[in-house]
Image 1 (cartoon, rainbow, N blue to C red):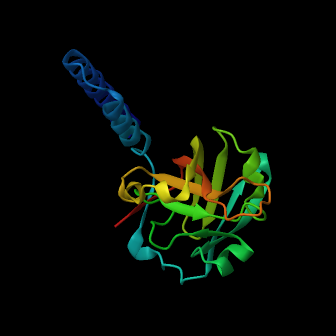
Image 2: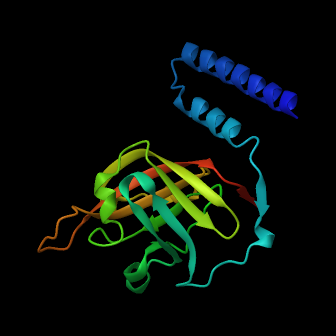
Length: 196
């Protein structure tokens, strides 16, 4: 098994190098190829869980916990992101995929309460999402502050094994409706992959 895994990595690296050399000679960007190979090899030996064995949570139901030890965050995660959900913990948009899926989970929380520790987050920090079907570790790769109206929802259909965690910004209380959001783009590091 280990020999087979090594052969797959070796073949993926050779394919990546060949593709980078070809694209470089054509004057094209190599970022897309490298990212695709990284995703493929990082998920190669992970265990899987069939979606048919998982009961989808009911709306407003607690279905997981989310934590980040370094910043002192540890809270319940609800299936839904209404004001009532966010009163008790973090909430996941029900139009996005469960943690462990190939497409991103979109998770939000209030900056004045549950997600206030996010003011201390840094790239490299790890968030752990614990569900009934597996424990998932996601690493913060990028932090962005954006206007909430400019978020591109198309990325939620992208195959990327990501969690996108967000909250209102700035963290201080203000006397106007906050338009900005802090967005954490996190990549899956460990945990079983969900398959059909």
